[in-house]
Image (cartoon, rainbow, N blue to C red):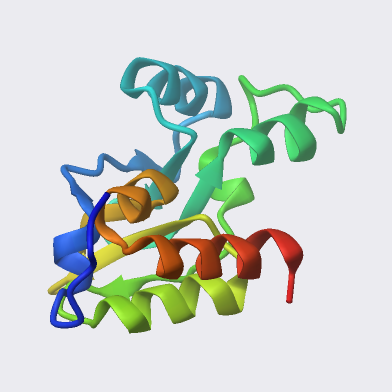
Length: 144
């Protein structure tokens, strides 16, 4: 249980070392990367190593498999959406506000136009005071 400091930044919350799936990679490859890294979402980057969007395991299931498409033919770039991110030096409050506003559970962290990490619910649970975490969970899941 953490007590959450108001002077923390997005960098303090994030898990570093986020790996991108390149936009041209197929969804079966993205799925394998998620499995190997034990994550449920990957940032999508272009050949310029810049963030193009994010893809989740749910996106792959709903927008590809359930839609009757072939994950060996659909690319991550085809599903790239939700280009929402936070600057590494942004406050924790700003990062939470962005996540709540967009009702997202994962947020890429950017520095100098490059992805440097991701903030997930697990990161929030490690770093936020219980009351802040409860507020976040209520906002995300209740849609209030």
